[in-house]
Image 1 (cartoon, rainbow, N blue to C red):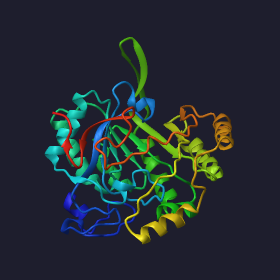
Image 2: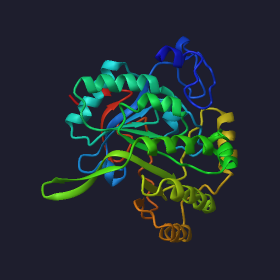
Image 3: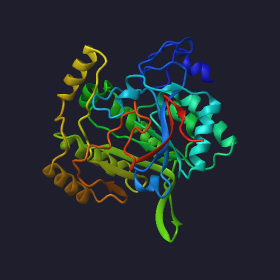
Image 4: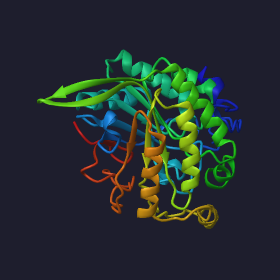
Length: 336
């Protein structure tokens, strides 16, 4: 099955048909080899995900989209990372579990679904018991997602925009809204929300065991697009999933490898205002939240702190307060 998916690859909606088995790369920038940039405990996700022990994040190299503002551009677009085989992947998962991770959080793996599904099954056979979360852009086919339905428990899809014009300009994917609606609807239907209360040292918190948390990042100067996205989520996801509205858009200090890459990014970023969300926009977002009255919604407090932006050249890509790395593409395991 895996060979068929990677040969003349049609895993993602682009169906670029690259023969990744022979070492060629698809739009995602990757061959059949599974590459990882970083893994560790992460404390910057939604409270239902991080709970007490943090989320056991694994950041994959490559991506099915090309977001001009991607904070992880070093790994999503520039190929930073190292190959891992099944044995090493399983060890990463088990190590995260032993360190107290609440879940295994698979970040941006849409272009490697068959292999990741295989590796997760191997990890479960080797003693992985904590829930597995699929953290993606939602730009993935339902046919590919079917391969994950027996190994993934929690779904963390983005719902980036409902505008095909914006998605063409910003992500090189005009069909993103249609694809994302289909994939998110599939996730909601297949995985009803299950949240439990857990305790540690007398403190109680909620923890998601199964279900969907849909994320939407508000773009500065494009609040009208957010209103339309929330309208769709209210009609199709409210009460059946959690909504996470994010206001932390931050200009990324890109280091482009080529002049063409630099020019494309600058042109794409002209589609909105490349700055922090301002107070007026924050107040508008809060009014929208109140008006829609979602059953379960997270919203971040406005902040001008940009120290959380990652640099995957470092063994600690994030701030020490946000993450505890256990594996890095340059040095592999950072703990014994």
